[in-house]
Length: 244
Image (cartoon, rainbow, N blue to C red; front, side):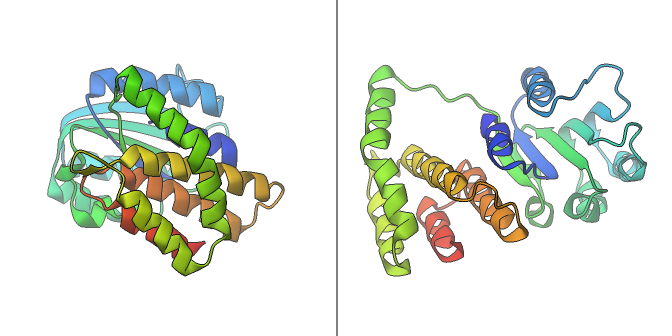
């Protein structure tokens, strides 16, 4: 979840609809604290900061949410909606498709759900899915990853950005061969994407046009989809290779 705000601090871009996987009681205080700290928003007594929890988010609640997000903000500032639910009916999801695709300007949704799999594909395509889990690793693996990142991935990121499309695909293939047991090491891909984002940021200082913002959105989406164990890290990197 932290990389949402790391990306925001670097680029000034905050996606309008996030789905965060995890336990509501655990994630809510962390999310509220992160929003206050990184966006400079006061949550208490703020009419533009709404927090709601539903055991089951149904179509009536969805319609109420649609109406609420269209209202003008009180302080001409961002409107934040944090919605938690243990279940999310298909009718409610369909009712919110347009809202999550094009919410009122300055409105941001953070939906906390136990599992993103409960979302319909049509709705999932309109949000950024983020894992709220805090993954722990043993010291040996963490040190090895840090060493690999510092010595290789910074250079690989530069090489990736400067390379031809064919060579970018070759880098993606090479990284896909680095595995933990039988599984692709997603942390290697995440570290590479972090380095790519850092280099792009340094190269585009002062360039805040739509094309530049779109590049950062693509990198951010790739990092978000990488958290989904069903995604292909190699295909995500190949997609970036073409976009860049």
